[in-house]
Image (cartoon, rainbow, N blue to C red; front, side, top):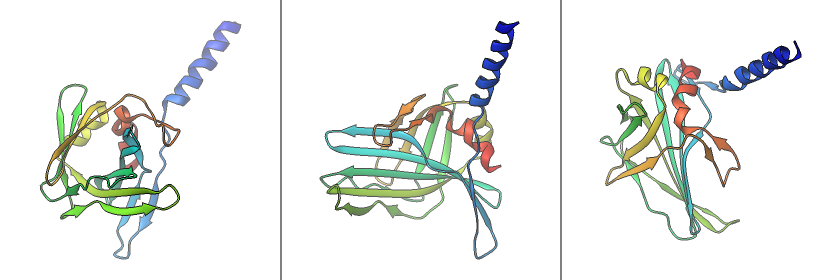
Length: 189
């Protein structure tokens, strides 16, 4: 009987941990539209020889229209490379089932801005963009983990491999990029 009770508690704890809680913020704009957003989630981290690069995703719903918010952050003692997004920019997401989902840039041309961190004496470049989902892509992303991200910037294409679990050196936090959409899309619907 004790073993059965212990097993029931273990399964209940596992079920609670398997469910992800939705954390969102809601903001009402001056024009009356409501924007619901999820927090930033690290999808990629590269730390090498004093240079760091991070890729963050968050989701938002602009009066029911889902949008992927993209942010690329690069930090270095030197000057990090400039990346730009334009109307032709795309994000290609490969799913573990082999399918490729395409997201389309929603903004005009935008390049990464430069900020200087005097405390750590680092140059920081930040690029933010918004991408729209194509027809049928949300259903695929809700069901399938992702394995690879390719970003077509204005002048080049860069690949970002996706891990099942990302233990961030910089943030000292665990992220789960592979199941990001499975866990997060429900939060903005």
